[in-house]
Image (tube, rainbow, N blue to C red; front, side, top):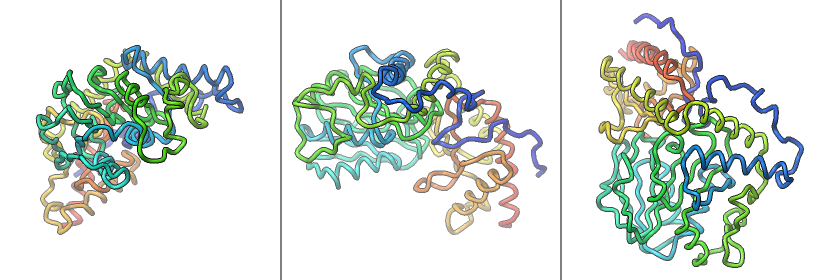
Length: 384
């Protein structure tokens, strides 16, 4: 098979940190508040701008708190688990590696007694009809490592008694989140808007705030997890007074990403861009047969973390199920400079993972796909 001649203008397809927005350059950071305290009037104003623009783009209700917290999405999820769980039994949903991590934390670290785990294999979802909303419910909206997402929020009870705690790190800004059904939502800057790492976002509903103020965890709370003082919410966290020192350079980058989001039509524009990327891959899968989606059901197929199995018979014939062959394909694409960081997640089935979030141009996806055909053919020829 001949090597393709058209190359992606941007070969960055990593699932985190993700591609920067189209047209980004370091000049976007020229206004950064460097060398100044994040607690200065100007510093607080910058952080508050991130919060306010985030609320506006995502349509977060006015009475939901929005805060910037340490340690990326992981830190935001852990803050929620350690601070809120305990008063009620828990249903935990896991269908990929990060959901499984939250299960392990609740069972092995917090050691809570009444925990049901509803699981599914990579590419599928648990039976959402089994979820009991008299219990607290912990789940990922979108499986970053499996390419499967919940299709909507219809399965979440409006009259729930427990809290819904949602890890939405690869869904926020690319999928429509039903805020009135979600009590805690977390994500990080480095996903759909292509921001920099180490900062998390945490959204709390009034019901979550009520739990924080009425429940005292049975375990010691690290300082970076504490959201209450004297039994009351530390409101400053949700106005730009962060728990620890944030990077003002990263904050400036987050503001730039949010301004770009506004310029492409806000949330609806971001969703359309991401769905267009998924559609490009779906057209290629249907036409070429080089790969198939790990999430076979289109209704639950992710438009950000697009996970693929390679279908070449030479790969399937390998004793490792094609894991080394798939890794060779990813390495060959990187070597040619047409696609970086395309290997599937280490715990996921072997294949490729293409990030299709809003900062990725459909034209770059379309340019990448013939290169995957070529790389698979090259590796299969070597295996023959």
